Length: 181
Image (cartoon, rainbow, N blue to C red; front, side):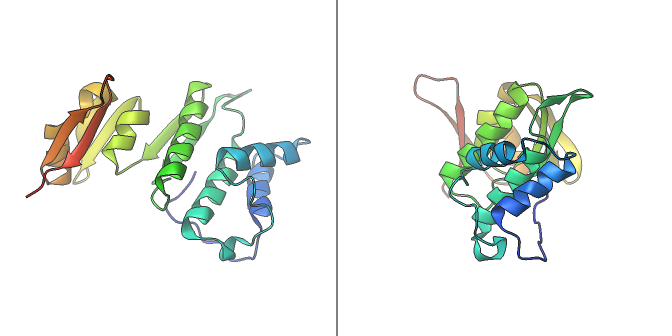
């Protein structure tokens, strides 16, 4: 589980944060390999020694995502599929790292794991989600496969603002943006 905010009261390094995920998964003789692979997935391969408190908010968020990936480093275990629960996993990240984190989550799902992610960006949801469960006012406003569920009308109601939809050149990808007043 990757919560929206994670507070670390101790001066841990990135590697120590990631190893907490490995330990939570029951430890591993391959702890160093898992730690390095997960840091690479989150774009933190150069960040081994910095203390978590010395990092920017986005770097801290990526470090915690790395910890979560280390905890469920195999999408399918002996007990079946493993799950990632991600609450706004890209909220503090620049575009490059948003795409990187979403690609890591999509790869996890493609390899047999499950991912449930809370996202506020309909373009990321359109690009990465298989299914959409849109919630407004605590109630389901739409549910179904992403391509059929996400449209400008539904998003306009959901976000209480006028949303326009365009298509990617030569692709089936939809893009959403607010209408100018």
